[in-house]
Every structure is written in structure tokens, then in C-alpha cells.
Image (cartoon, rainbow, N blue to C red; front, side, top):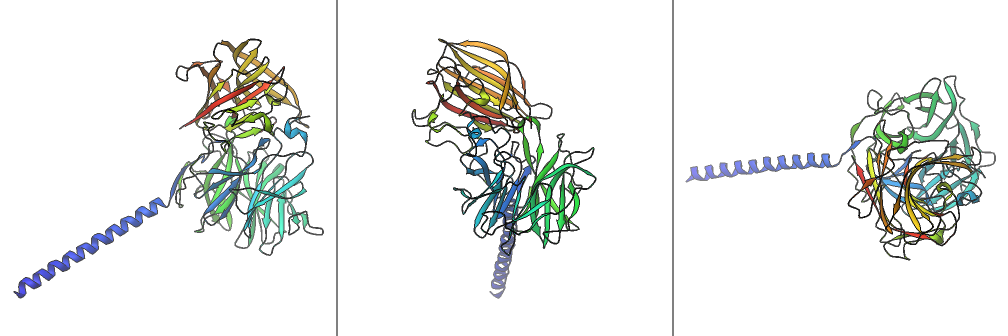
Length: 543
């Protein structure tokens, strides 16, 4: 009897131990799975789209990034992420700028001007943005908010700061790094520069450099000040450099922290560094990629001898990587289709210059975007209410459906790959007839005023239309050595025909200074009163 009890006890003990071992094993597996889930894989570029002049701030696990969109309205897009890989547009700092009539495409333009490289910072419960339009009256803007996904309020207009980085000291003093080594102190309420405050040049360009060092972004780490900038060395390519000092006023010493061509494209440089809650550091730097614009790259930041060295252990931008942060699902992308079924535009849309508010509507014909003609002009670059979204690489496709029945004689509506060098699908009303024309436009802007001097237009193909409803599609290929757009039309959104051949997209900093965009437009060349109704914009990104 005893033997049976003992034997039973042994069996029970063994079963309990086995159970414990199994549970321990499962716990280990769960932990391992949790660790895997708490990391996020990435491939560079993390956004294959025009998102230049990166400035980032972090509060807890939330990251906010601001970029440049210059003449596009609303402007100063603020993007949110929790893993530095997946981003969504959270807000725009302003709806419109009104310093001059040029923002309304009157008496000139602000192509390539407007809101330039910005700085976003968090300090004592509020987020702040500083930017300086590169145009008259040459006054900077400072905005603030307690919720970067909400509305931003104007704080002040200060003197102009080129490519500025706002910086808050722990003691409440506020500084701006800008230009090529300029440091100025602001009043604590940010209303203006501080009389008698710091106003110095913190370094002089050495013999290795040519031209400006710009794109200032400053970080304080372990008591030291780190100023990241881009430089153009003699007979070299753009690169990222860092100036560091033990005191904010210097002296500063310089080191090259990234110099790399990546994936066959040139010029990696201009960006910032940021940490996570665990103390890891990362770099976000953009790269020129031709027609699509300037794209963000994510990379490790390794502290070597107290210098923030960017890239992998060999100083190269990684194609792939894994970041130890839980994957963020933004719920939406930075480019999206739109059925126009809401009374509010999708946040991914931006107008070319300030829109004419009473010349567009989402409610006059529910389910459609109505674009009315509001000004007689003779080219797309002078046309109000052209509405745009980014294009993306490696390939993408955009389709619009347009009711053109209410166009008037002389009206020009359409869909374009919009830039200083643009490819256009235009519906032209000429008397009682309508034509679909594929053409190219190259704008010539005055270097000083950005006024439109001329537009070189070349017609590639033309067909007469017999329907009052048309579908237009643009396919774009931004793979290495491509930058090609092709153009298509359909009467039923099923059977498509190509028109006009291939168009080579270009990024030209002397013209619009932006990546190529999808653009929907409608303008009058003779008389006002016409309009188009856009049924939808369908978008597809192709890997």
C-alpha cells in the first residue's frame, strides 16, 4: 500500500515538474515573441517621397517630425510616429500665409520659397515650431500648441533665421542656431530677440568647406552641445557634419559624421538625431532622389568618442534594419486616395499657393470635389486652386474621374505630374468641342521675384472627346535612372489607352524646389463661370 502511495506521489511530483517546465518554456516563448513584436523592421528610404529638411522631437513614446512644403497650403506638415518608421500627417502648422499677394499667385509667386526648413521642439508642456520663409518681408514665424495633432497658434514674428534650430536650455533661456554658425538668444516669451543677449558666430568655415554650411539641428547630450549641419567640401559631395562644444557659445570642433552615396543615388545629408525611451539613438537624414524629391533615411547613431556617428559600423546607410520599438500603425498613409464623400478634404491634400476659398466645394455636389474657375490666366503655374498630393517610389499610380460637362469655352482642366518640368493631361474646351491633350510644360521663373516669365509648352498628342465624363491616369516610376511618367485615359475606367509617350520627371531647385506631385486643376483662359466635378482620386503605390 505504501509503495503505491509513494509511487503515486512520485508520478504526481514528476507531472507537476513537467507542468512547471512546460509553463516555463511557454513563458520564455511568450517573452521572445513579445520581444520580436517590440521591434520594427525597416527598409530605406522609410518614406520614398518628398519629405525634406527633417526636424524631430520626442515626448515619451511619441515622435513628431516637421518637413518643408514651401508654396503648398496648408503648410509645415507635422507627422507622427512611435517607431520612427511608419508616419502619418498629424496636422499642418498653418492654413495659409499672407505676407504678400504672391502667396495668392497675384503679382508673382512663392515657388520654392514660403515655409523653409523648420524646427520642432517640446518644452514644458508645449510644442514649438520655428521657420523662416525665404522671401520678403524676411521675418520668422514661431507657432505653439499643446496638441501637435490639433491647431497651432502664432506666437510671434522675429527676425529671419535661415535653416534654423530652436533650442531651450534647462534654465529657461532660448536660443536659435541658424545660417553658417550663427547663434542668437531670444526673449523667454519668444516675442523677439533678446536685447543684449547672445548674438555671435560660433565657428568660422575651415579651408575644406565651400559655400554655406546649413540645415542646423541641435541636440544636447551628456552636457555637450551637438550642432548637425550639411557641408559641401571642395571637389566633394554633400555630407553631414557635426560641431560640438562644452558650452553653448563654444568653442566648437567639427567632425564628419556621415559621407555616403546610398543605393546608387547621391547626396545623403541634412537631418537630425533623436533618442528613444531606452537610450538608443538614431539618425534621420534625407537623400536627393531626382524626380520624386528628397527622401528620409533612417539609420543607427553610434556614440564614438562622444561623437554621434551615423550609419552602420562601417559608416554606411543600411538598406534594411530593425529598430527596438513596437510597430506603430498610423491608420493612414502620407499619400491616400479620396472618394470626396466627406465635407472635409483628406489631410494629405495641399493646394498650390493659397486657395480661393469660395471657388471649391465638397458640398455643392456631395461625393464630388467641385473646382470652379476663379481667375483668367494663361498657364497652369498661374492657376489658383490646383490641388496636389505627393508621388511615391519606387512606383505609383494615380487615377482621377472627372465630370467635364460644365466647362466653358477656353477652360483648361486636368491631371498632371506637376513640377517645374511638368507632364500634363489637359481637357481643353474650344468652342463647342473638348479635347484631351498630353503636353509638357517647363516654367521659367525670375530668380529674384519668382514671377512667371514664360512657360514652354510642347503638345505631344491630342484627341477629341465625345463624353462628358473621363478617367485619367498617371503612372510614375522612380527607380534608379528612371523618373518616368506615363499617361493614360479611359471612358469607362476599364479599357485604357496611353497617350503622349514617356515623360522624364525632374527635380529643379531653381524652379519649384520640390518632388513631382499629382495635381488636379481647372482654370479659365477666356471667361469665368465654368467648373469641373472630380468624382474620385484613386492611388496605388507599387513596390
